[in-house]
Length: 257
Image (cartoon, rainbow, N blue to C red; front, side, top):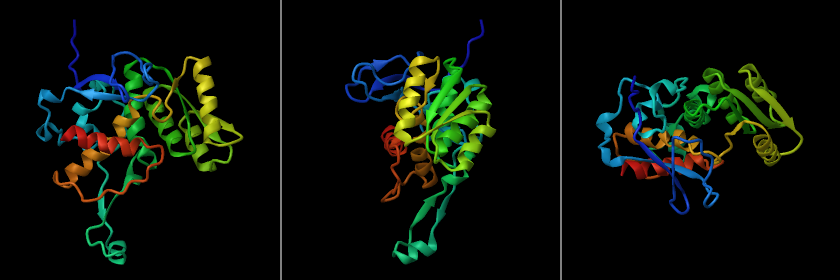
């Protein structure tokens, strides 16, 4: 019998409130004990260090040991991550900040940091045998889900407010996703996604409704540390949005410590 080499140090999922453990080899959404987000926990004592980083991989998957996909063949990647850090000389001079830098996430596939989270989430969905995903979005997340699902051969449904810019709607459609337009706001899209998820065999990729988008976002923290030669900046300014990137960067630093 062929034994597949394990590609990750993933140990278990954990309720972010009470710490109860969940089996990562089963399909999980959020914790059933506290109805809170689940977080992936790794076997840190196994000895992973910066020496184990795959220097030949110029994507965020260079940190595959600390990402939740167990087997390499399930990784769905379009080349996301390892975005450049650029010095902002003009802006830095204006605000008397001679060491002001920007990590340019616009160079990710589909044009935003959403590619990180959806790459990991769709990879894990493939690994778990999920065949259909849904997401409520006002833009970038829908395009990212559509792109990664297209590569994975997974059906994608994207629910958007009707006023979402046409370019975002077209991006999803061109990747082959079903686009549903809703009169109202992103919260209305979220309610419809929940209803469809309950009525159909479809997996909800909404923010913090599954454990793995967070894991993709945390690679921002790993990259910042590595790109600064493991000496972190004094301050990191991050636009919170849905919160997964902010939590992810913190999670990365905690794991590295």
